[in-house]
Image (cartoon, rainbow, N blue to C red; front, top):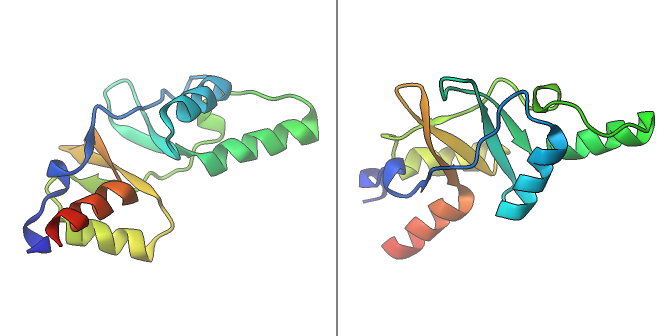
Length: 131
């Protein structure tokens, strides 16, 4: 039954995303305000090109402590390449990715464009409904 459930039906639509030119301080503020552990970085066409996580933001803070200068652009701290999941993938595929990789969430793409975000929380909530 789990194989019949699609990512697109359980993802968060209209996800928070960042431009690579955004100031990392503004990105940190938005992550905290939205209670997210990370968000995709997209180009001007909406294609994911990186991911900015809490861990990446901590690297920016450490960098600031070493050089006494906090800031910079998201592009300087984002993780590349970005790992995405297709909207048509099954929740089984997603659960396998969460178990075998360290990511807490994945940008969801359709035809290469960002259409949502799937978190561990979204996946567990779907499984709970199934049980």
